[in-house]
Amino acid sequence: MNPRRKKRLSLALVVLVGLGLSISLVMYALRSNIDLFYTPTEILQGKGEKHEMPFVGQRLRIGGMVMPGSVKRDAKSLQVSFKIYDARGAISVTYNGILPDLFREGQGVVAQGVMEAGNVVNAQQVLAKHDEKYVPPEVEDAMKDDKKAPAAAYAGNDKGSVRS
Image (cartoon, rainbow, N blue to C red; front, side):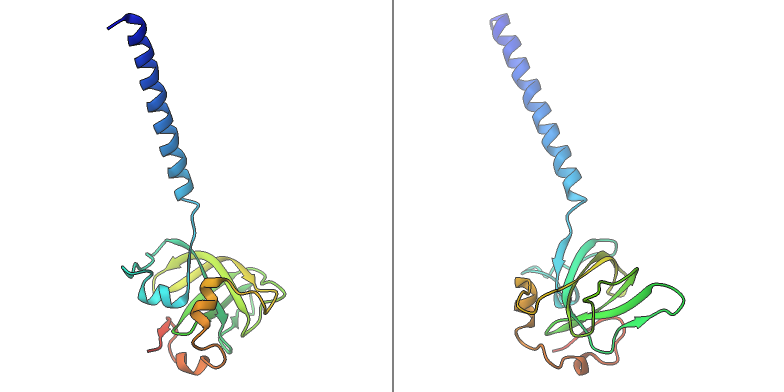
């Protein structure tokens, strides 16, 4: 092999290895910033055909409606706990901070946080829906079955529940 070709081949290999390493580092960095969207039912029963359950410590977003009667505020701090429900399940959420002005019972919300043991989401951010006309497609699909009076179906279970 010609020395000039050998030098070009080695340069091409170094560039390819460097490009592959760069792409893998970027993908690794982006992996830690991905928050998957779940509905309460998907957290309780699993997501997709394989019924993949979120693991403790996983960052995620959960969307649904705030269950009437479930909002509990700590009088001495900004700690708030409430339940988010959809047509077939309810999940407890804890949040430490000031809630959005539009947050209220029966309102659609998206909470972004970390999954904890006992099907509880420790939220770092809570977003309230500002318009009744817009609902994220995933939440709308989950809410089609039953939106008006689901609170009685989940009463009595503090760690999340599933309705059959």
